[in-house]
Length: 251
Image (cartoon, rainbow, N blue to C red; front, side):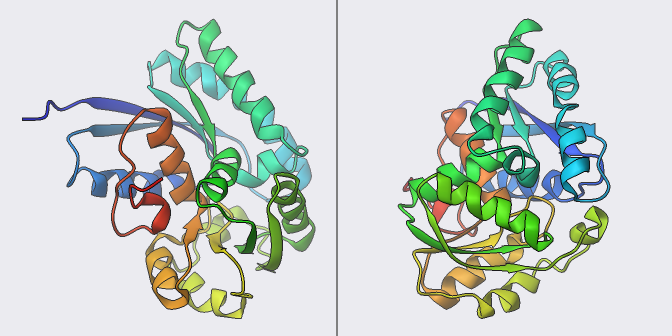
């Protein structure tokens, strides 16, 4: 019989985020039907209400405090759950952020691995071998362009995008999780992969597998990619059926 192992998942989230603390636990709870590991979830929040470059920059400056707080709880991994905050700080910034937060936890005596949703999305795209993608975001168009530039700097071409232009972060979290199923019909599907939500706050988990079935292509979201990278960093099996190709256990 497999011995049960327990893992503490630490999440650094914007104060107005309501989705990552539901979607990531939903995936990992579903995983418990297939694997012996069990998870608890622990969050620290950074103030942010409106998704603007100014608020994102101010929020990111508060992430060190969150890393310290979560390392006090001896979490097994830190997950920075705001993709656009990282991507708006400059190309490749997820590497800087991950190193900085790791060192902050290390200073507190807990050398835990760090995942950012931005780095996880890039890593998930590379794991699936994607070279040409289409993306859906809730952001204003200038922020979506920063996301596109960031992804393309990582060697992946963004062929098409849709920006829903919702500035209020709470409104983003209130979107229907099945809405991406319809909205992505307007995206160019002559690509390698579709990103159903390039935002950790826009709910999309219920749509991922349905879009994948419709288009016959891999489909991921920020929450799926973040969960995948959490599992990889913890050295755990990535088989979680029902959430798209990235969590098929093949990658």
